[in-house]
Amino acid sequence: MNMREKEELKEKQDNEKEIGNAIGFIKVLGKIAYVILYVILILILVAVILQRVSNNQIGLGGLKMYNIVTGSMVPVYNVGDVIIAKGVDANSLKVGDDVVYKGEEGSFKDRVVTHRIINIQETGNGKVITTQGVANNAADPSISQEQILGKVVYKLKILSLLSHFVNNNLFTMYFVIFLPIVLIIVINIVRIKRSNKDEEDEDDDTDNDEQDENDEEQDEKDDDNKR
Image (cartoon, rainbow, N blue to C red):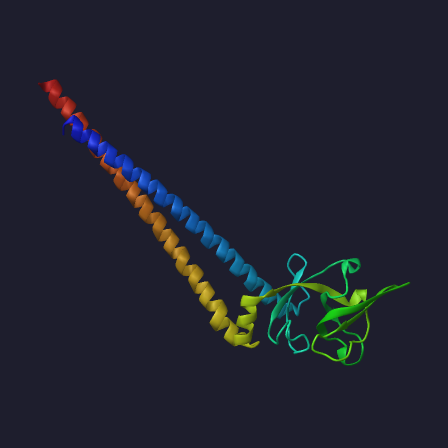
């Protein structure tokens, strides 16, 4: 192998290394994106399980998930929609806020209700709050600020669609949502491990090529010395 061929070989190896580094960087970004996606999916699953198991007695970071079960807030929230409510200071509440509260009177007793605030009165014992469903003709019984479970901060559109499909059927939720997500996670973990193994094999091949090249150079030097 003459000097020019060696330079061409070295240049080719350098280009291959640069391409390999770029591909490796893209793979790392892909893995990070997968991890972020999996974390989000797992958090959603945990939130759903907590909601089902604890009957919304446990939340994540002050956030709780609720299902809309009546049409009293149509068209703002439809039956089956999934909303997120956050515990807030009663002093921050204002007319027009959608809140989740636990009823204590009449037909509302022990029910979790999501309605809109239409009036707030200050009393010596705190705030007296009046709510009403946007689709209802009559206001709800007045409630105290202690009954407020949270203020609605977001409607989860994707989970709402899934909720409509699942229709509160745990068996369907397991096979249609939970099991496929777990399978996707497992498949991608296996894929990542296999990709790492392939990269290790490529590194071994590169090391072997470099060793072969060094051996050839040494042989040439030995031949020159003999001459």
